[in-house]
Length: 150
Ligand SMILES: [Fe+2]
Ligand SMILES: [Fe+2]
Image (cartoon, rainbow, N blue to C red; front, side, top):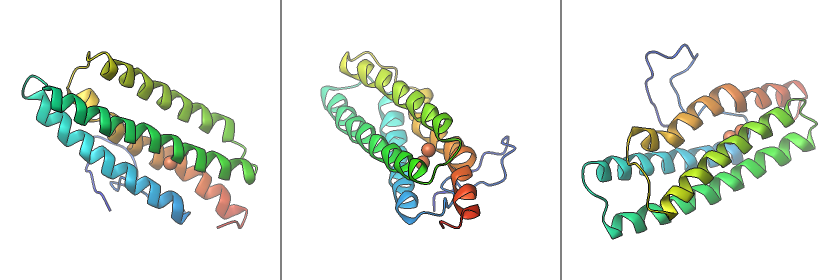
């Protein structure tokens, strides 16, 4: 598992990828975490210099993969929540939509070659995953457990 200490955080766990009770979704979270590591590394590397054409191509390719997989993951979770009548589904979908919009904003900056390679970008996926999995996704686990689905 990927561990990331956040000493200032009041959250109950330091484990980024908390078990959400559904094997396929856990697997997808791990893949997203590995994308977050990759994004973090490349952005930190590029932030130390002027991005070259090769850097932009690398970012293009990685970010496209991230956006595609985030879409796949969100669809998987949303289908599961809908299937089991999860009451907070609309709210959860709204948070997915919001993050998808954030990704689309970054994507358009990449397309325009007008992106700042700073900590905001390098932590974009980390920060979303950390908060979203531990505080939002975890709630469907509780619901599915109560319903006896998992
Ligand atoms: Fe998730
Ligand atoms: Fe989610």
